[in-house]
Image (cartoon, rainbow, N blue to C red):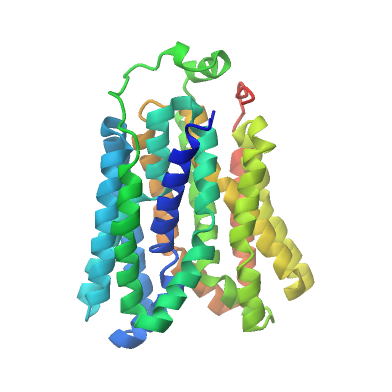
Length: 395
């Protein structure tokens, strides 16, 4: 349960996550073109470098999770603040393709040990099975990463160029991110068997019989499919809206609805949906994007706001599910390493999403949405294979 004593921790971690996401995941959407033009490179080189970063994060994730299981989140997240700053400062200095790749590779190392999965593992390491509400709280705060990050990046790029924008983010990691992560409580020594008295009786009964490996494979697929969709939309939503007939100004305005919708979805999870098993809320969230696609394809650009709201709300809830479903099905012991392994396919899917979905848009225009809608339905179908087991007690 998230108590008044834990809210300061949630706010600090959530703010650090807002900084981490805004300065990495959402950076290429605004800086890819200025980077390419200044370096004299095709814009595809920028997206390839970003793909390299995401692949590096996929490889590193399980090792970072294991480190958090052993030592807690504080030292790992503090280290990633320094790595984020170094990678972004290095990016501001690049002059050629080799430098670009190396800078993004360093940023990818930081992403593999400093984004949501690491923050979730840090919370589980501190709070055990009671971390669900705190996980939701972090995503509530960091749900504004694009809403805050894009305007800040745009302002810095306008005033100081793309190199100045990268340096500004690097400075923020040292001046704000590092102190915030340093404020995380030190973790106690890990407990190797899970003691049933540490968790509510019903939950202990659920964890007493660990789920089949099939559950891990299903969740890995669901997370990969939904992260592909999320990344594809983050990279290409304005382009899709313009391709379907919206004006550029309208596309930007509609795209701006996604961030607040994500937060609204997470507030719904924090309020009503947390009384349900997280599998049920994940199923509803997986359906949201396909429903939004159907509205868009049937009604055209006029349904753009409805699509953005549905996609954003569903994505917001699914972000929480990526932290809570592994906790419910497998328990807190070894959570960080298991989370890293299960999320590795998601990082790979995320890495190739901008390129692959961009090719779909080039070929089919707005019809590429049928691809993302189909992936969303496949994720829902996979979730329907799972059983809730014994529901979590109401918090």
